[in-house]
Image (cartoon, rainbow, N blue to C red):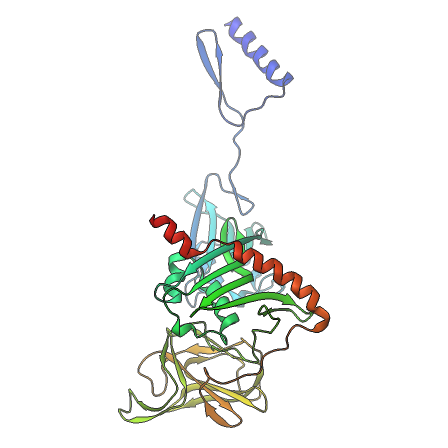
Length: 421
């Protein structure tokens, strides 16, 4: 036994001299026997809270559920629940707790289930940690956001959305792409073989994509015509231009909802699905699920917001002395959207529905130019200002770099051909 003690002592002495450390169980051979040496256990931490020997429950907020309701379910003392209402809104606004948002409850694993901490995650970046003690402690935290630049190319086989789905591209990126080229390309009439290349920046948290930061360049070949989108800031925010320096942006967005299927176009004579008669259809119908957000296509002032038997819930917006737009059959009009209210381009004004004379959920979008209704998808709108002469040299440098990078991205059609050989 004496040899065993001396052997262990010398072994630890050598470990100390050479700075060798171990985090796990270590087995040191001594003569014919082995003895496990256990070092202190490293605690498991989540959200800055130790969870060893604790119960961790993950769930989401239910519709019409208040935070106080959730806490009562987990036996949080009433005195701590009452402190919720005293929190400054700059720290946490209990009114903004939303359904389907994730929460995590940490409590003791014994029969008492003593609550230790509650974590609410309103989005992938932010999370709020509530710690339960003699009083309520609140930490507002953020995860690290990384910017990852990506390149991708694709060939249209059937529809843009089908191709996008095959490539695993997010709908957010698709809609940004469509918004940039909306007035140059009819995305409802793409043809097989149309090709695109994209350079974009993706925001990631813990390796998972959460949003698109910006598109850094686009090449698009449609019906044999080549289009480029070059990002450039003239001092008023990022805008997109073609290779000649002309702005791709118009005064108004082309689509009042994120890109989707057109179920009925502007027509002077259409069979009405409800009235069962032929009559003019002076709008464009966008098929979309109930609840899909509707956006104002431009800055303006709300002229009308209300309900009629034919239009259902609707909003009408005057953008300037020339252009007015109208949005029909809403399931809901957004809060604050009323006569006289000012709205900004792309602002949420309501949700798709089927109120009024409608057989299913869709948005009927109407457009006036100089007081006369016209086809919203064919109207000629003035473009935004081109690259200024003073910025031309700088723009040309940016353009050259972007176009070289886009040309270097392997063509999707070449990749498909090579894989087939």
